[in-house]
Length: 336
Image (cartoon, rainbow, N blue to C red):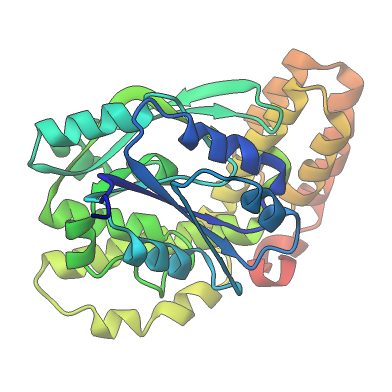
């Protein structure tokens, strides 16, 4: 008789050779052992396939396919899953050894909870600790928080497969922010929670930020909340969904420019703290084209960590914002 695992871990991989082995090993070395590990190699062109095929662990189910994108790949992986519970894992992140054990223990104890995330440690590309990101833990707090922001770290979640399938899974129109749309629908129908203990490590590379993705992430998040409001009023989403493409193609708003520079400032600060001045300049040159809001964070960190000459170089770059307003009507799709 074929054994059915309790948990199915689903991971989609695309050109993730650098950190892939660390991510896979973090799952295989869990204290909880009764799982299957479904890995979708989504058309990678680097050494991803070679690395994955080197594993001999019987719990790994490897699927090599043409590139379909994250949303479709996750739906495919979960459709093949046998476990009662689905756990997510991203290919450049790390699950701490007791993650599955602690999440499963919680979900088995509290039958009313259908989706469970955890606090997350953030590290840089070299594995150096940056900070710990904590989320609201109880259902009431999450319901309030989710109306303005994402209350879960995608790779950290474990949820009941039956509930996921009842809602139709990830919606493929969301090629980005697919998780936020799903959590909103989960929270409308079921109780959800987070563990306050960090059981997942998320890797953040300041140089990997993309202007296009910053804007898309924000717009898709707003769109997800708008759809949730439509559902809350008992109305159909059909007419609103027709606005999808227009929302993506709108010019940058002032609020979006502020979000962009805040994200760039955060990344520059991390680079300065690692003494990566050259990389910091690259982001400064790109980021300050959009709006000077929140640059005080960047300037403060520069004064704090580096010499006056470095600050003056930044101010020289900033002069274009105050004397030449060419970028005010820039659209992100032209800069991506």
